Length: 403
Image (tube, rainbow, N blue to C red; front, top):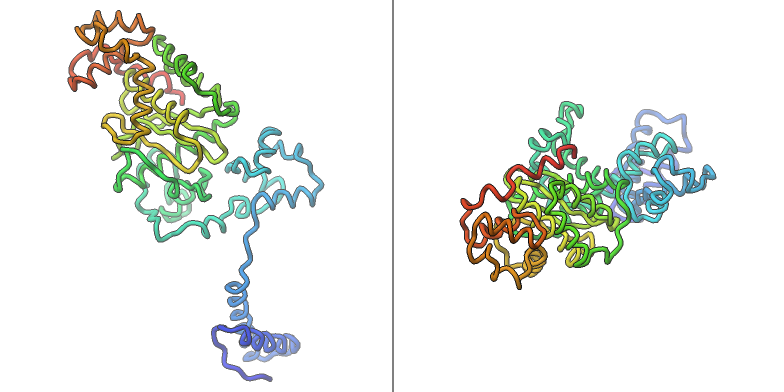
């Protein structure tokens, strides 16, 4: 027998020498003594470790696994409707235009017998995430548990809190290169201390948007123009305006998510695009006032119209503070002028002689809610003690309580 001291394999020649030893020992089975059996196990482990490093096996792609199982079972796309919901969704998923959701993964794992790990792509997640730049413990775990976004560690069989957060991020479909922690977040709401908190909020927004994906039509570029924004503006005069405006925006394929901000963040809203091309407007309603709601809604709509073109970027907005960002300036201008044209504002009685009567009269002329005019006066003068009865305190959240 060849006598070689077992060492970690570093060269291909060493690999082939160890392979010969293993082959020789295998040929003696089942007549190996205890020492030979131990050598067989040891050299086999060394060979396996070398092969994994030298010739790593790529993890199966989730879509490739589904296509393989379809071919194996002779299934057509129509046969997958029971797992995905609609024919169009089947086509989008198989074309890699829409990510798998957790319910889909569960249904496929049970119905087609495909490993959940393969469908989720856990191996790909681990290989793509640079753990050195993500500190999972910095996420606002306690608040995420309190809000019911994730379960406690005890409910997850004592799973580490960081692992639960990682699972939450993955379940939102953020395990690709466009993951929340790899997106380019921009906006005055973003600071170094709130980055992880905002990522968690963003993951929740995307997750909720995908849960509602079946309720909206496919978005078509060009659906937003001045005419559409004017339709939204006119709805502000209606008592049911907030609900109607959100429904109208959803009707053109834009997802609108109402999700309160997490503690420590100053956030009014956000504009982004999901990986499947669905634009998302997120509102926190942190100020339950009509003036804030209408300005924020049209501001974020302007971002979708003018600035959000790919899933690689998210714009986060704290509209109580000024910004030097050109995109913010443009969105502010669109929102401001859509409600109150520049040509009319400074010549109006509401501006020159601010009073309750003049504000209401000007609002009637513009066919908008008086709260918008009162809010603009408060903002421009810096006097937030005036016209408090006109800005619509407590008149927004009640429209979205069921959400």
